Image (cartoon, rainbow, N blue to C red):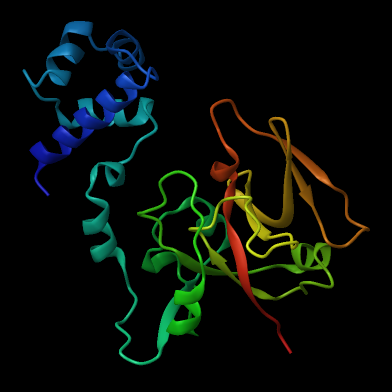
Length: 238
């Protein structure tokens, strides 16, 4: 991708934030230390930014170069999954922090590759809140001793969980049953049942000896921002 295209994508991203009321040209100038006219000229395509200038804008707006790339192109280049012509689909196992925060799982974060029947995965219904189109849908995480113990007897330490990251809604998957979720917490994830009370998330363990946790949702955030995905399959070590 050419540098000019990256600048155009950065402009588009900044204009989206301006249109949504999250940003102004004056605020961006103050954040970066540039003159307001300099920012205005960039936004209105009258001039470009140097590499150093782009770096400043990316840092203050909490963006990375990956945010400026075409997600489909990133997915095509980042994917390490070998093609599968049989009845099985390869699913990547990764760490809980990566599963909670990264839309795409790159090779450096892959711990293992497990196989699931394609028919099984196709039958799983998504229920998405917000835009998850560019998130790799299925990932696998292996839970540690404390996480596994907190959800006993539903889970056990060392269990592998298939997470459907396109199911980040509180809508019950089956009538009368609570969904089990991977929930984003401190840029990692915990496994819990989830309810809401006002702007709070109630995280309930299955093991009554563990405490119920209450998380306050940040302003402007919804439940879907905290739900990494629904636990749709559990594999136990024997």
